[in-house]
Length: 70
Image 1 (cartoon, rainbow, N blue to C red):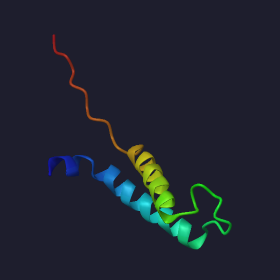
Image 2 (cartoon, rainbow, N blue to C red; image 1 turned 135 degrees about the horizontal axis):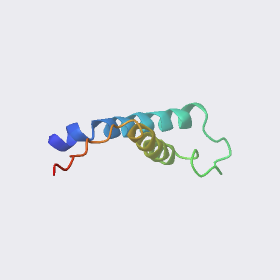
Image 3 (spheres, one colour; image 1 turned 120 degrees about the horizontal axis):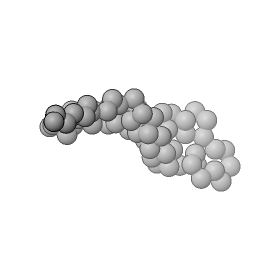
């Protein structure tokens, strides 16, 4: 449960990206079927999930570093 809370922003990005990828396939898609990414809904969803993960992970704050006390 702790890992889910720790990576909640990335998980949200994967879910949002997959939904956006599927919506892109459904509404725009590829009429000829020769497009690698948009020819099938699975390809579009996976591509969107990866992009969602990368974009949402940019907004995660870094953990504070411990300062050495001498």
